[in-house]
Image (cartoon, rainbow, N blue to C red; front, side, top):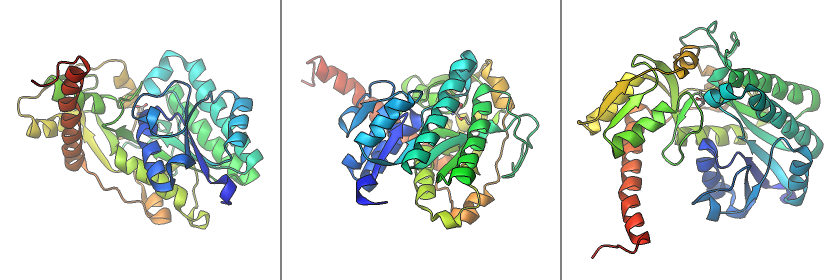
Length: 333
Ligand code: VAH
């Protein structure tokens, strides 16, 4: 990239992935070279950690002005409505997820941008094999979110072959993060359970105990996106639809691993409508293509992720009462 187009734009920066991707990009490429954007105002620490702009990915002209003004050369396009929330407003999910992506692809074509875009295991459906899902397989999702991700993968491939847009993407599994609560996903249970375990010692899980899903710890997810974007284009046979995996576990196995650290932790299981979404997704993924084409290797398994999550959340919640007390001027006497 030439000097004047080294800037990176992250859309959906306030979301679950963006909350941890933005700081890591800033650490690697410089605080001022990463512009965070979202449709909503950021909270701390994102708000004071570097440049931020309000942006609506359905407004192509507004995005074009932003790309020109800030001399953007690369976009991590994360803005999307997730699976459970998408089922509450399928029309909005299509507009944000597909029209938003189409805007970004058209701007990439016009301004020569490089793109990262997160696909998801949500592209798979009941007809997809449940175990070791191959890179090339049946994509018949039963959620609007999954349909938008299949459409997105096809659009990205078209823009690569028809217009030469260098767009890359990963079929992320459920992502577990300590820094941001997820919003509107089916795999949210695997994040909520940690907060409940640390704060209350009990959790009511909204999927069945035997529900197995592919999952990944956020540090692995962030590193995968950056390593894919830094890989030489000549290495890649696939582009925006890489299967990627780290671990698969059942809700019951996750609860049991948490219980090893918090023996008094109690988890009950009361499936809600998100169970049907989880049941449509596979249990394990074959990520050979990612491993062979750009050297993907996960670093966190269930044991290491649970240890890291509980350590981080215990620190965060331990700090919060003190911060609240100081804010009230009731500091320690
Ligand atoms: C969701 N967290 O639950 C997202 C993800 C594979 C699941 O795409 O909708």
